[in-house]
Length: 217
Length: 114
Image (cartoon, rainbow over all chains, first blue to last red; front, side, top):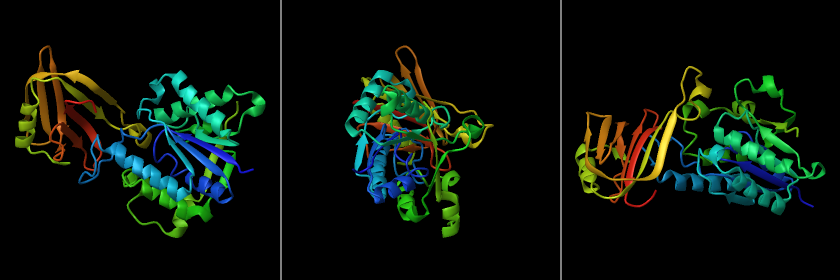
């Protein structure tokens, strides 16, 4: 039977830099991916010079970018859950848990990807990871799928150690770069992509390996 | 959005006075401010889809601009505004963008919720 993967992240583009290669690799090996994106990233700040978006239209632009990114990766099942950007940590935990619980029941994933709660910088990332971990912790120990987490806060390795899962995605650079480029409104930011064109070697060095921490319940 | 024309914005402010409106008011340095530079103090605040009504309002400054709206019991104030949405004439969408095109401040008024 095909492997079922559930991805739960709060913003369009959260999949692009650290997970898209792994997903493309799994999909090419026959996996089915459901990606639950909690918000549309409507509180994002990049509006462009000159502006291509405003506070009202950004949501629609980012929805299209998310769909394009998923298509580039090959993701078969995209769910947009409609929560408000920046508000995940304040959302009713019961409501979040109900949505995630229903998704777990429906998808019955063999693997789950999310952010590592507490080590993922953006409060939405941490709250998303916490909700996923909470929902999976409710399952009997023997039925819990492994949860692979992304982490990138300052000093995260001092507290949670080195990642234990490494995925070589060098053969899936076209999908990964297409996913990153799909989020055009977000990744013109110089702090993310730099100002110069990278060579193929530089791209592989920078993006060729994806790293995850298996959550210990 | 276009760089603010004070004349057009003033007309919109005047046309929206003395009626119930929904406001979105926001100021943000971005959630990653301190992650990229630990000397930065990250701050952000917004209020969205709250009803207000003002009887007097104006835009001032040489750019970036300031807007003040006088309500029955208080004021609404916003500084640092650079752009307005020209294609939306039922609502007033104002924003302040930094040199990289990132939103720092926004003030939006609409007869309908955002």
